[in-house]
Length: 320
Image 1 (cartoon, one colour):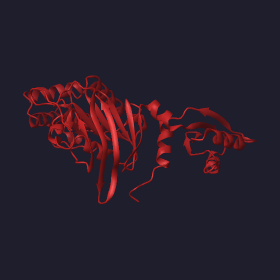
Image 2 (cartoon, rainbow, N blue to C red; image 1 turned 30 degrees about the vertical axis):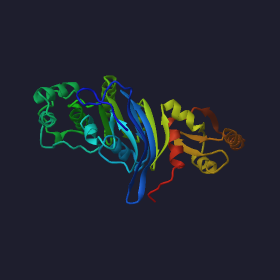
Image 3 (spheres, rainbow, N blue to C red; image 1 turned 120 degrees about the horizontal axis):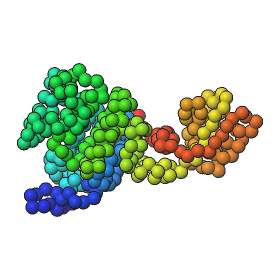
Image 4 (cartoon, rainbow, N blue to C red; image 1 turned 45 degrees about the horizontal axis):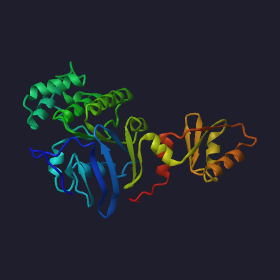
C-alpha cells in the first residue's frame, strides 16, 4: 500500500481520514484476541473503543499506532503504513496508559521539562510552563508527582503526552480510579484538543465516557460488533426496551429471564430495564406478565448501557 509524501518526506496531513485499517488480526499463545477488524477514523474525531476487559481494545490501539505488529491485515495511520512505517507513526503519537508512568520523585515542572528535553523541543522550560498553565496546574509546579491525587496525576500525564504536539492521542482507560469531577475536567480538555485538530482514540468501559465520544466501536473478545455514532449504535441494536417499576422487582427479573422476546433484564435504580430484539414477542410477554400485577410498564428508548449489556450477553469469551 504505497503512501504519498510531501517534499520533506512526511505524509500529507490534509486528508480527512487519518486511520484506515482493515482485516486486523492478532493472536497470543494460540488465542486470537483481535479478529478481522476494520475501521476508519476522521481527523479531529474522538473515537471510543468500548468493551469488556480482555476484549482486545488495548491490542487494537497498539496495532494502529505502531507499537504492535498485526498478524494479518493492512492499513494506514496518519498517512503511514502500519506494517512498514511503524517508527514514523510513533513519532506523531502520544500514548497515555492507565498506569502513571512519570517520575514520582520529580516535581510537576521537572517531569514536564524532562519530557520536553526527551522530545528535543527547542525551549523545554517554556514548553513545560505553557503545559502547566494550559492544564490548570499553576501553583503546584514544585509538588512532587508522587504526592498528587489520581486526578492531578491524570492531568500531569496528559500534559506530558501532548507536549510534543502529537497528531494522534491514544488514551488507554485513562480515568480508571479517578473521581467524577476530575473525569469531567479531563474530558473537557480532550474535547478542546480535538477541536484544535488532534485525533483521539480512547478505550473505556465507562458509559458516561463512551457517551462523550464522537463515534464508538464496540469490541468483544476480538470481534467488532458495532460501530458508529451513539444514535447509530443504539438504532442498529434493534432493541425494544421497557422500564418497569413496582413491587418485588427481584422476583420479576428472575421470572422474565428466558421468557419469549426477553433478551436482557437489568436493574436501574428502583426500576428494571427489560429489552429484546423481537418486539412482537416482547410485547406479548409484557402483556402476559402485566395482567393483574401492580406494575408500571413504560415503553422507553434503549440506552447505550442497554446495548452494551445486550452485546456482552451475546459475546462468547474466547479465553475460557
